[in-house]
Length: 241
Image (cartoon, rainbow, N blue to C red; front, side):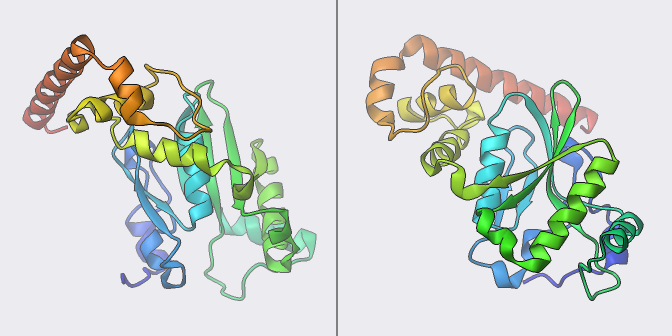
């Protein structure tokens, strides 16, 4: 278990800053021993970045968001300015932490292809907001983002079809063509890269699907992608990218 870094250490290491593959979450999953059974460090199949998710619910919401082609970036555990949250809390007449160094964070700050952003707080269901502290924190977040001109909304993980997110998790393991080793993984690659459309809210027989869809032409195209990837990686290594 990694020791939880101090606020100063997080700032010096760039936690909560960056974009795309260079972003580092303010809260890392391995900082929370009490959530050992639910926290997730996932790999963003589009950027290769390790994503820090503090619950299975966050993981499902993240999968659902990341599979959306309109989403270009997701900053998880995004830190909020402490002076602002302190001020908002005083206006609302609520407290949010007994720790004077505590920095609030929003579960997801999402950037869409048209440039607009959306802040999302994840809860399992509406009942979770019956907890006074969680309700107060959510109110502070809402006002914070409204003050920044960014829409804030709740995402209830219990409302997301687990079959959809399970299928997303299964197919995106093969987003990279280098992971394709046979017809079944090729089928998953096509679904992950949106070159084959199928409803994900169902049990999918990937073997049967592969037998009816995958042919030599498709496998040859994937092999060409692998060769292109090798050349790109070689160029990146030479130029230090």
